[in-house]
Amino acid sequence: MRDSLKKSDSLADFYSTLLPAYQFVHYSPLYARVNGWESKLISKIRAINPKRASDRFNNYVSPGELDRVRRFTPFIAKRGTSIRLGHSKPGLGMGGGERDFCILGAVVRRRALTVMYRSIDLIGGLAYDLTLFDSLGESLGVRWSSLTVFAMTAETQTSKGTSNEKLYPKLRRILNE
Image (cartoon, rainbow, N blue to C red; front, side, top):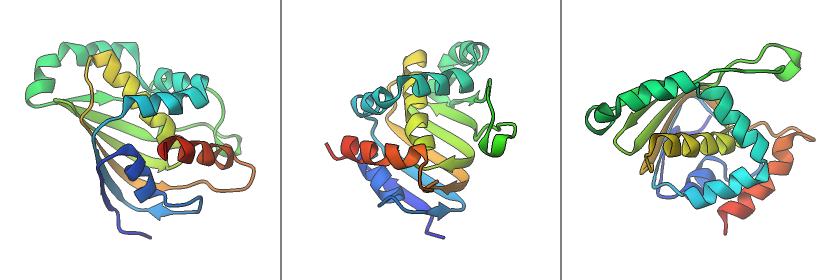
């Protein structure tokens, strides 16, 4: 287990700090913060698999919840407001069982986004969650200034033959540009 408090000034540093190499890491709990938001970098992540990025947003953000949060726009600037995440989870999870939501919810305060997780995969899960958060900001008309992540468990899925094995070098290339 590693020290769980991680602070970064860029998304590239954020990823490098949490995941220095393609190897198994485990944080329990994880508290991490990145100052700054790089939509251009996230657009490159989205381009790796646009369908997966789109599905992430559609599965986690219900239109009704988005409308509710938009009505709280004055609170976003002052005290912040919560957003419930987890809308539809089609398909089967690992081992063929029912799928569960890993993101529990978020708080939007001014331009800061704080996200709470039950668990998170630090390669594919986090990469496509960044696309989700970027789309959420666009939908709310907010350009994020920071992201804070709280997770009960955070780790990497580094088994041979997984999609993460193919995704990790692509992420590294994008983050090192």
